[in-house]
Amino acid sequence: RARAGAGARAGAGGQWRQARPGDFGFGEGVDLEDLLGGMFGGRGRRHWGPVPGADQEAELTLSVEEAYHGGRRTITLPGGRRLEVNIPPGVTNGQRIRLAGQGGHGIDGAPAGDLLLIMRIAPHPRYRVEGRDIHASLPLAPWEAALGATVAVDTPGGEAKVKVPPGTSSGRRLRLKGRGMPNPRGAPGDFFAEVRIMVPARLTDEERRLFEQLAAVSHFDPRGRS
Image 1 (spheres, helix red, strand yellow):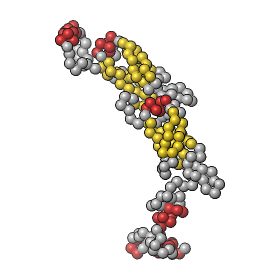
Image 2: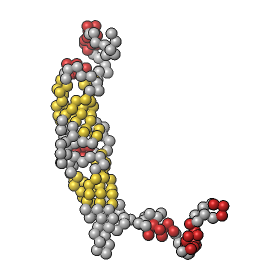
Image 3: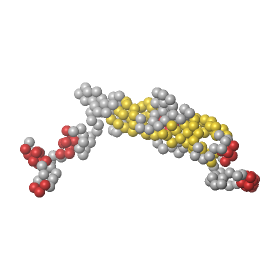
Image 4: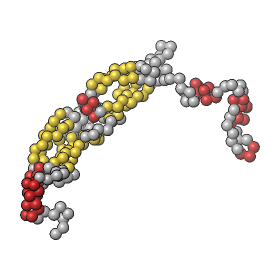
């Protein structure tokens, strides 16, 4: 015990040194990191697998559509073990699903630990998920935005109709209540369509004539100058 204490104190001149195996009464061939790792739950340099009977965590990446609809998925855990899991509809990013008894296996009759699956929603080319709300862009023609229209919009749950009020500008968010992520325990999220006014890259002669006519008769100034 005195030898172990001496190994932990500063040497001459106040300089600390790293303890060596001989300081603790062990031979030079003993790896202290391996030894301490075995004593304190595998925190050493080597790792031989899950602690028996302990809970484990694993991440499962889903598309927005998979998170919306749920369903059965087969996952492969470390060590090659395959497991089929049921994903409920409307899981959110970071949500944890506990699978009882699927973690570290117990020894000497001890119960097995649980597996905690952490849900991750992958980036999507059209949708952005915030909690249970879903956001997407809604491209509109200038006349649809100016005159108002009812247009179709794709959601993970299928096509929906959104009413565009007359005089809608880019950046306005149109809300479709309840068309976001489902919620098995409460109200679903909402779907927000953000307006983006698009113009033709090339104009026909007739389109150009009409736009020029509009420019000649309109007093609208989008920059707000008097």
